Image 1 (spheres, rainbow over the protein chains, first blue to last red):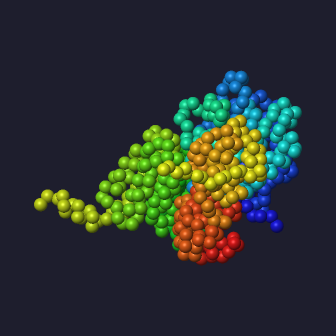
Image 2 (cartoon, rainbow over the protein chains, first blue to last red):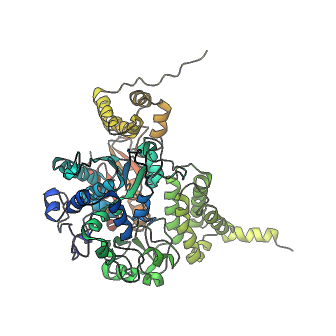
Image 3 (spheres, rainbow over the protein chains, first blue to last red):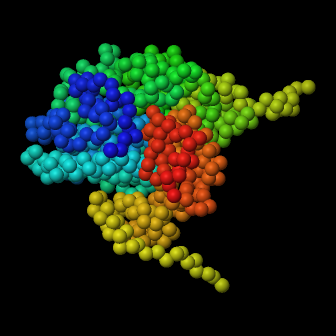
Length: 450
Length: 164
């Protein structure tokens, strides 16, 4: 009997079609990986054939730009624009395509599903993208703990090589492309694209200063493009089925195009991920797909897409799931895999857990992050024990400010303080409850005028 | 009188050396194989002994300090001996909500270790780990290369029995 993959879940059982679910329509009901023969029987590599044989490199870039594809790793930068930053100078002929498969964002398990079950979709997406970027070699930077994804990707690459889909003169087009799986050795910061480049080079994963951007000076100083797994998996259908079709996928009103792997976890009835059109209301995701809260649990707050996104309230569930739709209610969509916080969860304890993670995973390169995050942990632990001091909440708000966007070397610390700031904003009494009132009384007694 | 600080004599095995040299060719610069080289040594020996940094550095053409800097940065490279089996309990906020602290508590009761420690019999080392990407099945954990979801604290010792 075949092993059941960790990523087997509700995405395998909902109704899907090629027209509406470009990322997941090939998933098998039994959750087993789709190998080459089956992938090709389901139109696999037909988009790559078209891209390599019938399209100029610039046309592929323009098509992806026109489709409005945006990065699916959390930041949402337009992919075609990123591709367009690669230098026009033809003499710079050693170029790299890196796939960011270092999925470690808490509450995120979408890339895992794609790589474990549809490894050829990523290989095909990288082949087309490499052609567009004139990259002769690609690396999949995969986190070490994704053992099954590594096995399945390596097998898919061997199958593709044997079938002439990777290697020299692919489809007789004259294009050569080599693909290598590189596994990491831990550390969340490797998901930051310039830290990922340092790690791939065999260095400590400290982020690099930008500019220069990787498109100009990337891995080994060569022009480099870093794209997320899900982003690259969108490319075959855009090329195969066209821009008009792709732009018709999202719900009316959505400014983001296509579909997105979205999820809901926590104490919901049916936790999982599903491929849904951008613009779907979060409530539909929560109620119709995740089935609402389990009996005995009440929704208190939710986070739209990973540890680095802010908390929202149940009333915000009507917000549509696309970047500007979530920005309107005060945070970022992030990875689009939401987490339900139920009434039994104390926000101070939850934030203590989250900041312990962010503090541990700080690379230590810049002072605000290296020193500020452990400070927040110390305060949150004291508040959790009911031993906080009167100034603690103001100190935390100061950290939210001093570790915010633009004040640190990379986005790690800003991501760490976004949930902290919103938790204090919406649930301040829970933080105040952690202040030791005896201490407070003693102090006011000491300094109060007679 | 001064004493010379002697580190353990360390020599890469033929298997290790050839595996490292094979990996080097996947990259434009041999240094890129440093993490993989450390993983190769760790796979053979369970951890990375002190002398390994210099030996790996010689193969890759970089200093021992550079290799050591890498070895001490990455959380899955072990610079001290670990148990025969590695238990990694996911401590993401999703598993926190799913009750991972109860799993850790149970392991502490059963094995007498907290994250970062190894049992006296050298059987298990317990480590924290970033989100394992098994969030619809929280709490999650790994034992060696095996991933488990919906871990029930009351049956965690039965789960560990398979690892001797």
